[in-house]
Structure formats: structure tokens, C-alpha cells
Image (cartoon, rainbow, N blue to C red; front, side, top):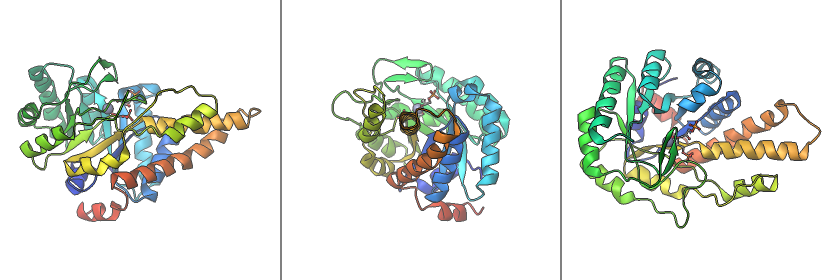
Length: 314
Ligand code: G3H
Ligand code: 13P
Ligand code: ZN
């Protein structure tokens, strides 16, 4: 059942965070739905601009609709991750996406507001909800690059939310995308979340760049021929603390890519004579499902499916 992120956030606010998982292909789709149903968690499927152009955007949309039929128990939102205005408009018109992210965070404040507001007006007219971003995560976000963190300013956040009418706000608090998040100790600015929550009580916040990059996963990849050095991620024990401060959506992409990489490297290391894609695919789907289920326990979303379904009266 496809629902909006707003409906999921109303259930989760202050208690737990909903996992927002990026996927690109069929094997990830099957593992993702299985893992969420197994752990009885509502969830968000995130499709990035890169994912939409990897095969074909319509292929992904059709996979979401088919997964909905195959997994009738699943309660999920279909969300565009880091969209520009054109991608948002396309997704709003698709009839499949229930949520879009307009990421104009590289623009100065008033321009960000202007673009975001246009997307909000178009989205809300069709029952689609909108996430936007203020501040910049260090590193690369789709095609935008920032050399340093530009933390979200709480007073600007309040102004931005009121001016644009968005449904959730992605905040920059020190995380970054990818597998190389922290050179030294992890420093997350929870004080920023706290200040935003005081100014915008009950308003859903989003944490991007939240993969944990487990050292044991990286070690297995490297033992099977990888050369991923100096990787580090977000300590998952921080998730519930963030949820209490209003974070209702936690974005995870990199960790899923690491599972894919580990499964495929180990498979072909151990079976060098094989070349059938279904060999590693059959291992990957349940491994990815296991990973999703474990992540949902850390996010606190595991076990909430029946209650969310009942609350949404669906
Ligand atoms: O924010 C970036 C997400 O991890 C999506 O990555 O643009 O390579 O699909 P991607
Ligand atoms: P990670 O790279 O930490 O998985 O973050 C993903 C993300 O924020 C997608 O929008
Ligand atoms: Zn992101």
C-alpha cells in the first residue's frame, strides 16, 4: 500500500524513525520489500535521479506498483530523492510517487524558497508531499558538491518551512553521503536538531547520509579483493536519539551497496568458474532483506506495521 511520507511521519514523530532506502534494481526491490515485511516495518523507497536514469524511470515506477501487488502487507511511500524541479514535476505527474524531495539547497535562501514553493504548489495539488533541504552536506549530493559542511541554521529553518509549506525538512548536522563520512571522531550536531525542534515543534526532520558503513562489512569486501580504505559511518545507536528530536526519516543507501558488493565479491571469489548472475542474486536478495530488517530494529520502526496500518485505517 503506497502512502505519503507525511502519513508515516505522523505515526512515528518523536518515537522512531522510518527507514528511507535507495534502490536501483529488481534484486534490491525484492530484498527491500521482504526485509520490511519480515520486520513488520513501514518504510520509504527512495529513487534518486541516478537510479531513474540507470535503466528507465518508468521501469522503477512499474516495479514499485508490482511490488505493491506481490507484498500486499507492505505499507510504504515512494519518494524521489534529491530531485531538481524538473524531476519533481515528472514524479508528481507520474501517479506513483507519493513524495518528492526538491533539493535546491545549493541556492541562496530566497531562491531555494522560490523553487521549493513552486514544487510544493504542484505537489500538494496532486496529493503528493514534499521534502526540501537547508544547509549542505559535505561531499557530493547527486551533481552538487560542497567542500565543507554548511550546517542548517534553526532560525532559517523556521522561516523556510513557513514560507514554503513543505512537509518535512532535511537538515545538515554533520553527516555526509557515501562511505567516507568522518576523518576523525564522529561529530553530529544534535544541538541543531534540538533548536529546530523548539522552533518547529512536531515538524518532521530528515537525516541524510546516515549509513553506518560497518567495519566488518568493509573487511569482508576487502578480504574478497576490495580496496575500500578509511571508510566510516554514522553510529546507529544515535538513531533513536535523533528520532526523539524530531527526525522521522533516516536515509540509507551506501550500506545497501556494501551488502551488494560483499555478496558479489565473495561469490565470484569462491566460485571463479561461474558466470550466472542468478547465483549471487539468489544470495543477495535474502542478505539484503536481513540487512533491512536489522536496520529497522535500530531505527525503532520494526514491529510498527500493524499499528500504522490500523491508524491509517487502510
Ligand atoms: O544522495 C545520494 C544517494 O545516495 C543516491 O545516490 O545518486 O548515486 O543514486 P545516487
Ligand atoms: P548514505 O550515503 O549515508 O547511505 O546516505 C544516503 C542518502 O542520504 C540518500 O539521500
Ligand atoms: Zn541524501
